[in-house]
Image 1 (tube, one colour):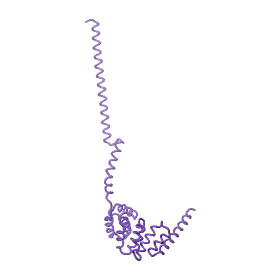
Image 2 (image 1 turned 90 degrees about the horizontal axis):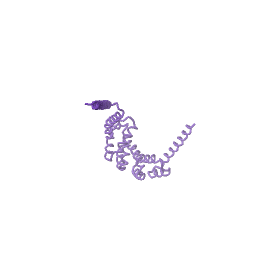
Image 3 (image 1 turned 90 degrees about the vertical axis):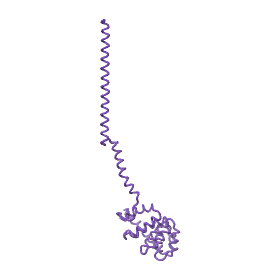
Image 4 (image 1 turned 30 degrees about the vertical axis):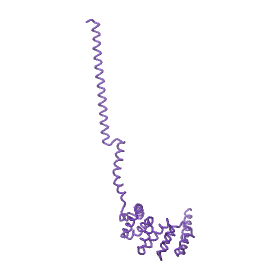
Length: 242
């Protein structure tokens, strides 16, 4: 072999060695980077499972809160019974809850609640019955009127006043016509409900209603008292400005 051929062969061998070495380095870098990425993925998975990631913490907390609120929503969809309502803390809480339940009740349910109310303790019984009858008046005023008249004194007077307050709001003429069928203090109780509720009417209109119920003097006395109260309130308000 000539010296030229030997030099050429040597160059080929050197190139082969360089190629193999380069391929080995590339492979090492490739596998090294893959190993690092895999390690980072494992670390990321570990962080997620521990709940450290803020975004995933928010999601998990939201789902947990939703799961806890579901029983409350189910409970809220079941209206309180009358016996439970009257056990609430104060008059405002009881009245608000009672109005809410009655707003969803039909006539039969309202009548059932009225019957149940007859067994309540005296402190809450009358006011509860007034509210129930007022709701019944919105559904069937004549039924409410018939129910109210079945009660004995003195409750019947309070119930009639409350009933006619409600009735006069949406059907004044019919309320006055039905009040005229009553007698004595029952008629007066109905008149009181109408005139106190319809203070938006003129004095002459209120006196005319009272005249139809044979007690114009009551309207005059009520209007006079309201005028005095309004005058007193204005004076007190003026004094408080100084």
